Amino acid sequence: MNGYRNFSELIQARAAEAPGREALVLLPENDGRVQPEAVSYRALDAEAKRLAGWLQDRGAAGERVLIVHADRRLFAVSLLACLYAGAIAVPTAPPGGRGHHAARIAGIVKDAAPCVALTDAREAPDLSQLLAGFGYGHLPCLAADVVPRSAAWQEPELTGDSVALLQYTSGSTREPRGVVVTHANLLANQRAIQQALGTGPDTRLGGWLPFHHDMGLIGQLLHPLWLGATSVLLSPEAFVRRPARWLEAVSRYRLDVSGAPDFAYELCARRVTEEQLAGLDLSGWRTAVSGGEPVRPETWRLFADRFAAAGFRPQALTAGYGLAEATLLVSGGPSGSSWRPREADADSLEQHRLRGPRAGRPTRSLLPVGRPVGSELLVVDPKTLETRPDGEIGEVWVRGEGVARGYWRRPGETNQAFGARTAEGRGGFLRTGDLGTVEDGELYITGRLKDMIVVAGRNLYPQDLEQTVQQVSQLFGSATAFSVPAEREQVVLIQELRARSHYNVSLPSLATAVESCLSKEFELQVGAVLLVRPGTVRRTTSGKVERAAMRRLFLQGELKPLHQEIKPEVQQLLSGGRR
Image (cartoon, rainbow, N blue to C red):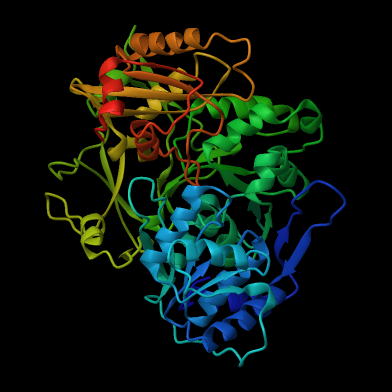
């Protein structure tokens, strides 16, 4: 699989080697008699070249092209067409009816300045109207499914340094930033994924992750194509409506590799019924990847226990770590390598050290996220920039061929994040913003630098607070914790209740139980507890909790809790307008 100058050349080679082989198997949106749609490498290549010729006619070579598709086949065709045409693909999520999704698309259009938006005939009018509402009515919205005849496609001169796509970050704490991914970055990261997961042309892969996010785009669409393998795909909406459909796809199509963020495994464990479970055979699921958000040992145990009857092997679960700025994967390992929770002393974690448990003291369970693959990794003190030894927590720094070029048209932020140099003089590293440590060669991620809660000189990881509170009641769903700037920093905990669970339940008692739990486990007096409806806690497309966005909504008084307990000094922030 080496020797290709760019990703486009490789995909064309796959189509020439096995034109009739299934590249994609697209599962229908709803259960029923509708048959899956199979797309061969020949058909995918031909459709992409036809659209690429059309883009070249419109002068898109070297320009940005916005890709806004809910349809998985059209997304794949449009993405490959951009690569074939020498254009720069800019994948983004369809609006989805939510205001902040529409604002995100507008933010990406403002930053990337695309020459055209590719969508489909049904969605084009709505997308045009949305963009016009934000002042971008001049941007053509073209339907990729009704491409007219155009001049013949001409293969562009592309090198490894040519920009393939812009991966936009979530924008949860600032304006969306486009990560500049080159063809060389794509090829290098695909080699790393293969090394970590042991995949090959005969591997069956698939899942439901959205293609506008790196884990779905790089891992579940492009990696199978890079291998010359088959990807079995269902939509995110189909998974959310009925989580069992993911596992049914794994079972029916004998998938070897599939993955998702932690919340998806928990959702399956809680919502798959006994009847649905009885029809599953998960014995062939060799590698179940968990990534994209903190991996919880509790979720793994819950999932493994729930689906043991379907033949699922706990050793199949494996954790990985990555980020868009590194194209996707930074660390991972073969299945079974992560099934070793590390019990750590909670007080030591607050001092940025990984130490074993102490009798009578609180502990935290951490799972390793594998060994660095295809890249060099350091743990660095974020203030002194000194490299920290194994067992000491610091910021994770990475360098390698898979690390992206930088942020689109943001030289200052690029230099700050991508040009890091240690106090010892080692340069060229990406500062990930994630906190972690290395022990016995394995990476442990302990938190996010920007999310750290500092109260009375103590460093608290918000995910520790969130996960601990989950033990208070089975009625609890997602949660988020963050601090607000009162006279002293105050912690706010927003906790979702599961659907209809607040009926005949004492909400004040639940709030008091949350306060007692945090006081007992962390010696922390919480500033506010809000019990809210399902779906209130915002997440990125990869499943990460958007803590900064939730903090902003809280301070602006835009949340509508079912019940809340707020200290006067925190309430003053809301009424006084301090941000």
